[in-house]
Image 1 (spheres, rainbow, N blue to C red):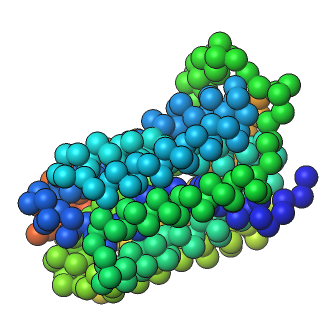
Image 2 (image 1 turned 180 degrees about the horizontal axis):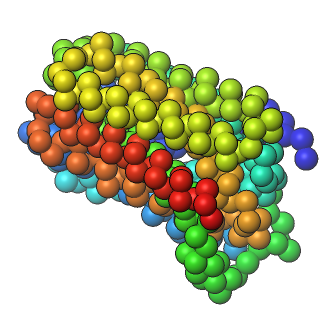
Length: 387
């Protein structure tokens, strides 16, 4: 089946619910934290709560889409996301916002897991890796533009206004789903709840699936350590403005786009496993370099290149690790995609609050975490390649 560009755009937009929910409000995170008179770690819990929602919501929406088809659960999740975004805009305190961000993440998980399931409905192996790479071209637009637009819009509105805008964007995506996304799971291929439970048990016993899921999860933990800590490190410690921070964040995200398209061109000539090794090695080198730079006190001139390498490496890691993990599960794409995504975001959610554990005045935790997760992802990949 040939993919119309409209379908690719819709799938890319759905896949973008993670960065859309996180990156757009990041330039306002320090101000949000100050407005609520909260600590850095408490402010970062608004990020963690959303990440955990994005993680565990997939466990509900993935199997549900195996039972009911892809479109109906997806549209329900998009409606709930819109309502949660508006509620975030009127949150009275930091803890209410943390709870609402959890709900927002749970609803947004529908887009991420179902988009990945649709890809597996249509492609596998090398072809799936290529399609995931194409989606990352679309996906890459969001983290490039979101923090820049968020920073610019903070001149005209507050962080509360940014959440209202998220609700409007969600409504546009919902309309696109109704118009352009076909149902890719016919009734004859759907599974009941008993099949779903058996499918999760099968996945949890599969060392191959779990190994590649852990590789992806650890790489995401490094990524979200950067997401949680970079605004404090660059704005508070090094005095970079909100707008310049948005531009730096966007440049790093553009690195993912470039890497993913290079991956799309090369995968097939080299195996997805080999391309994944290149991505993990690059991320590990960037992370270890960042830890060394931070400990040496070199400053922005050393921090920015290392962050660019770490972030860009995801353009190789995400499509290939996803394709390899899902290879053996065409019969349960929703459940497999759900567990893969849950591990991915759970790792990220657990890492995010650790970045602020030493307060807002040091970059050491961020550097050590990113370096440590890079090394761990390489060790996990070595184990996976031996299976």
